[in-house]
Length: 147
Image 1 (cartoon, helix red, strand yellow):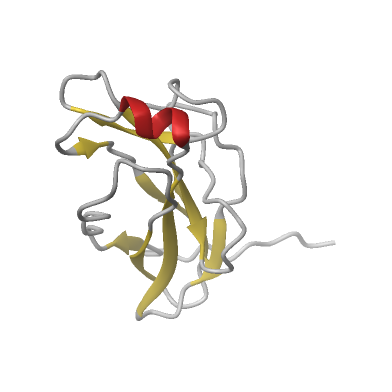
Image 2 (tube, helix red, strand yellow):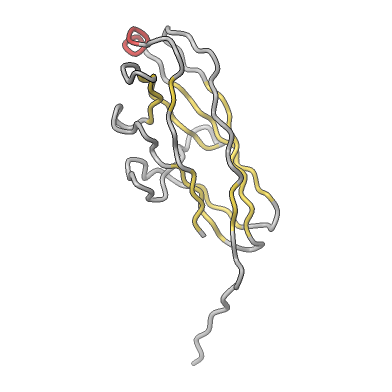
């Protein structure tokens, strides 16, 4: 019996730097603002890969949610990054935080850029609305492609 494998030398993926996910001006009242974002990946034709997004820098503030935080650190808003089906949250590929073991996105390379759409959702309830500071709230997440 012969056992063999074909090593695809030169197999590679690249990810275009995603732009900022910007909700713009939001109310300090209960609301659920949403905005869309894109992740563009180019992988060698036929190469299987996974895309994951980590929990971000502020993942310990709210159980089960990422958070954007004011510059003073006194005000935070939970948010979710959802895949284009509108229900599946973007999961982590095991970066520095395993808070998000939710599903990653898988695909097979085409040799051309493939764009994946996502939805960002803020969740502002009455309690959060009552504690919001004016000003920019931010978080930084890492997007990773494994192949």
